[in-house]
Amino acid sequence: MNKQLENLSLYHSLRELALNGKVVCFSGAGMSAESNLSTFRDAGGLWEKNRIEDVATPDAWQRNPERVLNFYNQRRKQLFTVEPNAAHLALAELEKIIDLRIITQNVDNLHERAGSSNVMHVHGELMKAQSELDPSYVVELEDWQLQIGDKCPRGGQLRPHVVWFGEPVEKMEAAYQLVAKADLLLVVGTSLEVYPAAGLVTSVNPHVTKLLIDPSELNLTGVSNAHHLKTTATNGMQQLLKLITNK
Ligand code: OAD
Image 1 (cartoon, rainbow, N blue to C red):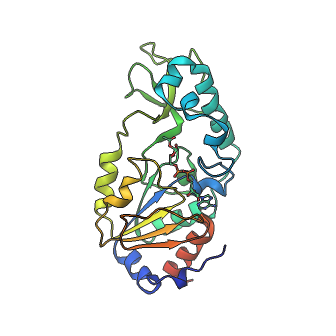
Image 2: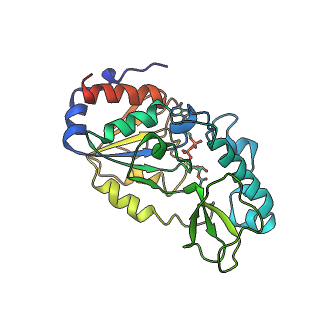
């Protein structure tokens, strides 16, 4: 499993590229897997234990809001028990020395807790709630529990501030603009199966170097200049940090 960065053909140009260019990291659930947060599509993942149509669609919310709240309450509760891992920490470290922005599909707050600023959450944030009446009414949550009866000042029920299947991904345009400026795109821990977010990777100029860090086979059809380091987020990111800092 300990695949070496130095075996990739881009190894010798990677440090210069990272130090002199704009770097964007696009992360998915695999980034937080070693913090003990389940991914969605791996064996035993969240979508194996819960049906998307029961907990992550507007219809599910209409049919049984309590069940939906409970699903996200459990995930929020778990978030209080976990810590950022070495991959989150490596990214926060890199931000101090390179021009790095993060786009994440993750709703957890582990990038921020590791010290990264400039994190764009395209699928929302677990520690926020929004009003059912007015999605632009968004509040920070202090605790893990969101309940029926928790309302915005206009009386709308609060729901998780998470993008459900069938809902528009409002942050997509801003995400496309950000990756369009990248000289190096790091893609860490995502199956690249969920659109439109996964389309970010294919949208990038073919000349832009892409380094993918993920232990699984990935479908990279249509992604040129891609280098896949088939290993875990912590191992891959630590190798990259070492290379860039020269330590
Ligand atoms: P997935 O569960 O689809 O994919 C997780 C990826 O993480 C897989 O490619 C795994 O190989 C990889 N992985 C597992 N362990 C890893 C490790 N230790 N280090 C690095 N990678 C590892 O999760 P996402 O691609 O993030 O959306 O899923 C995208 C979206 O689908 C999520 O944001 C969520 C989900 O439905 C919404 O809820 C809207």
